Length: 219
Image (cartoon, rainbow, N blue to C red; front, side):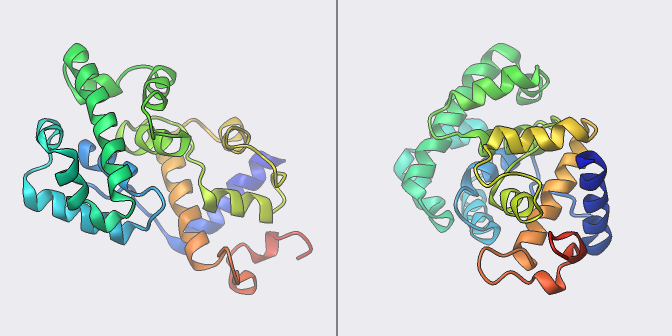
């Protein structure tokens, strides 16, 4: 039941919003950096921060690692929490440099088992499940569903999960009933972000205008 319902809701969202083709970024490294910078901010601010980084030098692992933390923080200032994010980014890039020294390239590193990669990412201070899974889905192209505040709001308001559900429980709901396809998970997550921004808002949701209005409990 949950499987067919989630598939039906996906189709309705896809018909309404159209293809999203996430994640914005010219390279795998840029997508990865963006996944860290987008914590607790909007994409417009992330875009400004990425633009500042690119103005400083072409984005490269060695180049970013060579930047002092204070300079990196100043460049990503538009993304907010810039001192914290600069250190988190440094932590992640250091891990990647160590792993690439063994595997040979970022692409080779990302070609490894998804659970191995996830454990490596989660071992980095400041990288939680949402950021790790965003990197895996959008940068590494691995089939793992990203859960964020928009996902929780959608699931809880449509009666698909209990209010106290954990990240893992919500992720499992999608991954247990949908085909393990990175493109599908990519589009679904992007569509839920669109839904959350335009209709399923935290405050003053536009339920009567929502494309999923007929699926709401009591509708």
